[in-house]
Length: 323
Image (cartoon, rainbow, N blue to C red; front, side, top):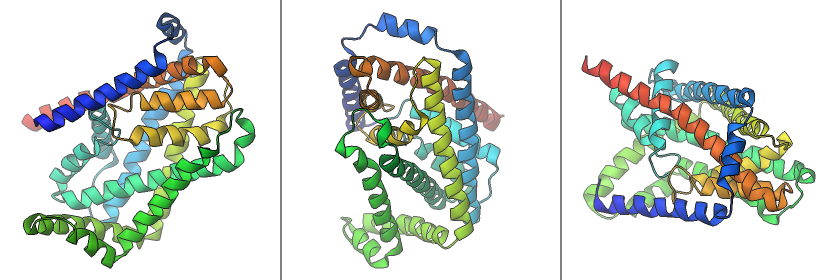
């Protein structure tokens, strides 16, 4: 790791620590730990099962895009790549850092790193679109459930939809693509980026012309996001909170978009800020921070346990490769 990257990682770790300290410095962590120990294992089991199922849903959707571009891979191998990427996400500075592993893993087996990158980009875009649609619809329909409504609750999902529309337009425009490439300094670097980006953009344009693939991918994306919402809802049930399920369609997108900002490690601090906003809006008052800490801690613990399976898978695959 270069000194600059190491320093940037330290900065992000400090951001996470600073946010957690700012939010939770006055909490009684003995009480939080006691409530976590008393969490209902049945609901935690439901949340864990949904995490397992969601990884298979993600692998199935990824396989659709790869197959549409002529690349073959089994759902099982893609599941292994996904869960291993989740393991690496525990240590990388944002929730999408594991995508680099997915590109390297499947790209090394297919010899098509650029096209694999395109499939992952399409995977991400469809997932973000489904999440944004849920959030936008909930901002219009779920307002009666929210005790402390803020005008900006409309913004995250609305801006995400606009950004995705702009990205789609950019992918469809040869002129805009050529303009962006010309902005890259240095002839050799510009030519290299043009070659790689050209393959990615070409593959993305190919997906846009395949209606059945996109329709199936969007259905899987909506299923994935719904199961993700259910998993967090199950966590709140496990720790004794009673929050209407429709409210999660509004606030989970906000929390997820916060986690994606690459200024923290594993989304720590930003995730907690999202849940604090959620609990305050739902009328928890002075107890909003404690409720947010409970949800966030339970989610992180479950995610760490599940993602650790990826570490086992990674070591197993390395051992098999050496044998």
